[in-house]
Length: 446
Ligand SMILES: Cc1ncc(COP(=O)(O)O)c(C=O)c1O
Image: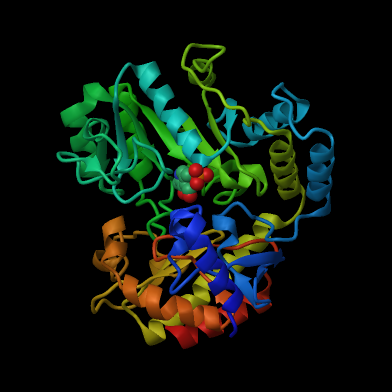
């Protein structure tokens, strides 16, 4: 496969963009990233004209793949032509917020921002302001964007910044605990209950190889936060309008968070974020309240139109049936291949998310309880070996993934997540032929 154009673009990029990219993960592919020229349904075509089945899907925002349905395209074009933005309110923001509030159980009001990072920053500020407390509980190995409060590693007794440039004093206000470990959550509240403003958690951890919540875990977090006067923030930047359809993951799991952060799909492929939640909290944001929050591009009409028309299309067409069905086919096919070739590996995912984590060890193949992706089921034969935290993915065969597996998939014309931590995303543009091609490639590459 000729990849000379990607190689030479990367060479040029290295002189003007740090690491040759504008977001870290994009530089992970070995030996250099694929530069994309255009997308077509579930595929992308690179700068050399090579065509790939694309499971990266913009890292999650592209629920339709690269072919935007006509009504969405029309709305984007008409709002771009009519402005494109004003720094004053417009009707489409109201309509979009009304749609989200109508469909997502925990959302009564919404503040649109420009990225998932901005959403989690604003949600943490709001939680701190309304509780008058500083500490935020997060899950070890989770990701909530490039922000000071959550770029923290270590454990609850010894949190430290995970990047230079973040003061240790900031990290001291973050309490990292292990996802799905109820005892750790109880201990955090026992030790710091008076100081905890919020627990910030993805309903399904989708940035560390996809970890499903153990039964009852979110209910425990809900109970602990209520008992101690803290807020529960669901970060649905990835799961929002992907897991559980229009009701999002909170509807699927029947948990009622105080605040929800969104991004990705609600912008229909354009930069977006949002904080949603109960009116009593949301109205603390300026100008209704005094918790400062603002943004030049927030509620951008083109983004709002793209996001709203995307969600309306999902309400009318068989989008979720299709993407979830393709997701199921992939997980089932991967489970067969893994059981046959590398039984110690773990197939994870749910709805339209999928992945194989290259777990080590001599564990048996996944059992029936987790036939459609690991569900953290204690009755599964290999419960002790399934990946439960970021560190389990870090300790998996990440080098094999990066140096051998992903390049082999690329050579076979299939683009999978750019590192071992990120999820793969199914879109409405993907077909059964794409599933077949992908499974054949996995069979060869694994
Ligand atoms: C769960 C979660 N929260 C927040 C973010 C940050 O979103 P953004 O990259 O739009 O700033 C991400 C990004 O992938 C995410 O996965």
